[in-house]
Length: 69
Image (tube, rainbow, N blue to C red; front, side):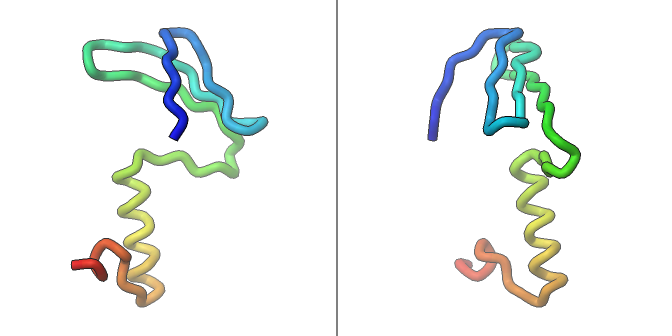
């Protein structure tokens, strides 16, 4: 994992076409703006896990989290 320190207004570039800008820092909350092509899905981690679990259920698979239980 790469750990970076940025301040409001600064940007991080991922690859050639994904830009993440620090919009606001308020206490322990950080607001990010993400600019990426429409073909790139962008989700919070918890939403991504739910989508993956739903896709696995539709395919008849057991998600890794449930299989470990």
